[in-house]
Length: 246
Image 1: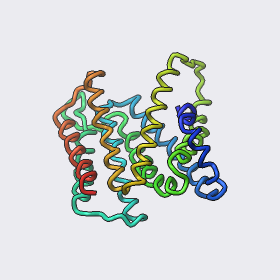
Image 2 (image 1 turned 45 degrees about the vertical axis):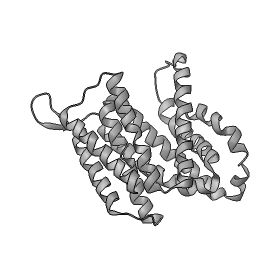
Image 3 (image 1 turned 90 degrees about the horizontal axis):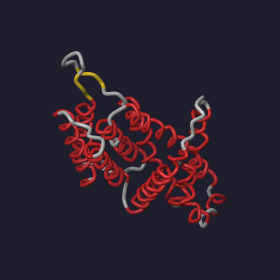
Image 4 (image 1 turned 45 degrees about the horizontal axis):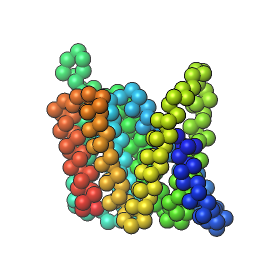
């Protein structure tokens, strides 16, 4: 997906290639962010594989909370009361949406895939924050291209260690489609950062989980318990507060 996605931005990135020689250290930083992007991607897809989309996706969507804290600390962005309320609501939502009743009784246990979703929350939050100073120098297309290429070496490590020789060519079209939409989403986010702050754009990007939950309910027939639903509402409220008043 990373390789295919890079071809969608390559023609546009070539026009900005001169910035690589002007800002080599920023290009290296972008490549390192590509490694973080790869680790975040592995965490996200692993959570999708073993967990329920309606649970792990909202948890992963709280990555903007991390990016907001970093933006306030390092970029000097203002943390207002509505933002504090939004972050608190999101944290409460995480507890509610990740808790499930155990099969043997009313004991509460952490849902499968939650640990990986939290891993994405931390790594993804760092990425959402760090891409702003990088893209402000390299531009959106070159930044996305380097992120893609920087991700490939990290992703190849677990891929090459697989013993299975199964390579499903039938999945290529689906992967290409995912790569296209993922690339467009990355570009849209970076373009948003050009006109706004991390505290505004990052939380709005987190609203993507509501679409995931809706598709999981409509297509995969996943069900939500009452406390899961309450958690989703709290997360939606918190992200909405962050996006509206950030």
